[in-house]
Image (cartoon, rainbow, N blue to C red; front, side, top):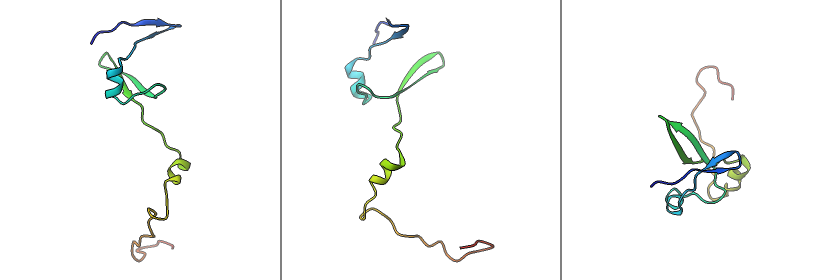
Length: 79
């Protein structure tokens, strides 16, 4: 598909067709990774960064695991 680059303030912009955003699972406000590979501009969905607080909210009595035994100390470990 061909499209046109347009001026947006001091930058240049490209409109991404809805069919592309749908297939790439992008939505308004989504973070993307923008890079250049072998002279081509590559746009990839950004990876979501999780905070410890977000992750710990998902720990429940049903999914928390118990202590795991690794056996008796070998060598000079101090337990």
